[in-house]
Image (tube, rainbow, N blue to C red):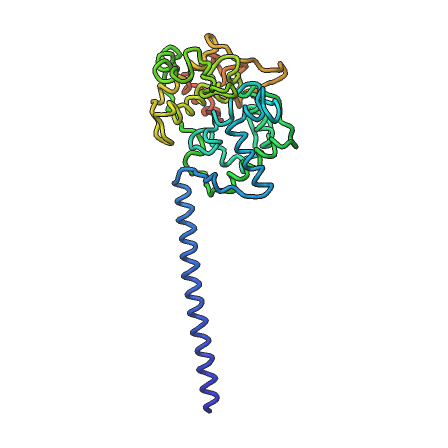
Length: 340
């Protein structure tokens, strides 16, 4: 009888212990799940950020570090007088547009690029790999020739972009992945007003002739050109008035803005972009081949892309400077979301 009671108490003890363990595990899991949810909410509500001091070691780490160097000092390594090859045709650096080597919020941020490609690109009318997209930048704003896909430079840039992707948890709601939107007015952007604003806010760095300021060693620019035969060419993203205005709003003047806190109004950014991209008064380098065709599917053209033919009734002038709302309304009326 005594043995029976001992056995019953033993089973009862095991049952209590099992229930307590299950309850503790459940609580901890709930806490972990709650922490994960809180973490995701925090990431969704935070500004994109990467600690680039925590790069990996070894040969992969060396590639990551060189890829970052290429972003920061493009002209030094692969410019017209580059020490590791002559691929870009001007002395601009990737970081001139993708600020802080692609990590600055609201400045053509590159943290998601490794995850986002391959993707369909309306400008090319086909799916592009990440390597092809990198070479787009080398060839268009940097007036260069394609990097070899299996070369050290391409692999290092890809490694760096993978490091950015691996080093941060981001969601679609993370702030700063895209440039800040600008409110589009009911009237066209004004190059004339933009000229006055350029003289006030931009000329001190980019010069009255728009050709920027070369660094003391002549290797690259202290302030890059915004027009001229060594600036970005037509077909580059920056040559679109709305796209450039979005970037200007978040980034210029460089010493008067902080991420997410613009200095220029939306209207001012649009007017400066209209002046800078006014091809009637400013020269730009031409495409190297006449075979190049942007937006082969004409209904997919960005609203501020100014070269016809178009599949809408609006002129090149209106596509370039606006007003853009009638163009947006036209395409939305056909059930198509226009590219902005």
